Image (tube, rainbow, N blue to C red):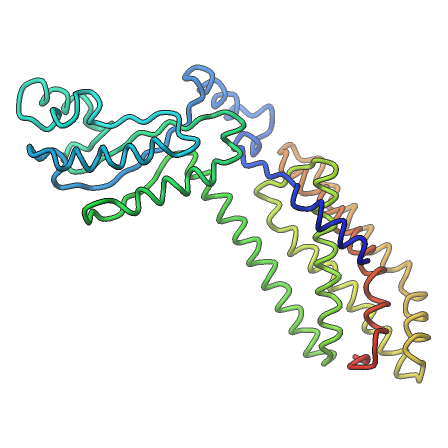
Length: 337
């Protein structure tokens, strides 16, 4: 068990995440075909708008344009930003704020693109690098852009980021956070259930360790076979938690019954495992087969989810075999549920 934990700890960090929006659609999807054609036609640039309000944007003293240039240069220096367009670029520097026919026509031409018709809403158009290398750091790129737009100079109120890359990054971020929250609360509530039913801290710790080893080993296997995690993978921990705790609860009940008949702890564990070996094996196996049925889905992440939860179900069995007997019989404190 310790060797598996060590190996999994070393390998699991290499598991890859696929955050591409194309991965969420079937290969023959008409929507995906249109989206791919759009990217081919217009070069595949991914657009993010950095938007904020500045009442003095076109002040003739050039203060608003100076602030805009400051923000633009910060955005342009961020890794993953390919190019930036703002209203100060069509005319040199603060000339765009002057009152003359050329400046007036330039502001009118770009209204609705680089600034609002109200003359106070600023929109900095940021084209992100669509290469695979830059996609790997897309989240950090968006986070740095958000930090810039939320810490504007001269007391301006914080702005906003919008655009498809922002929606995709934030969507994955929120789903991952929800998945972690779901896993955490599943473990807490199931732990409280065990405490209420069996009044044993040892037997709360054992299923938690079983689940953690199973999740870590699952991630290590996914990294080894190069199967990528996706948006729907966030439920993996919660599902493995339910399967793992259910498995250990069967052991707790049988072990308690054997101890109540006067058997010593080791004899009680041997009897428990001999009774439960086949039922638990088939329970985990049928869970795995049920998850593998998702392979008939047409969407890649759903197929991947079926494979990874099936792997997780079987690794719960391995984790329980490696952890439960040893920790159940270790020492003499709080041994009986």
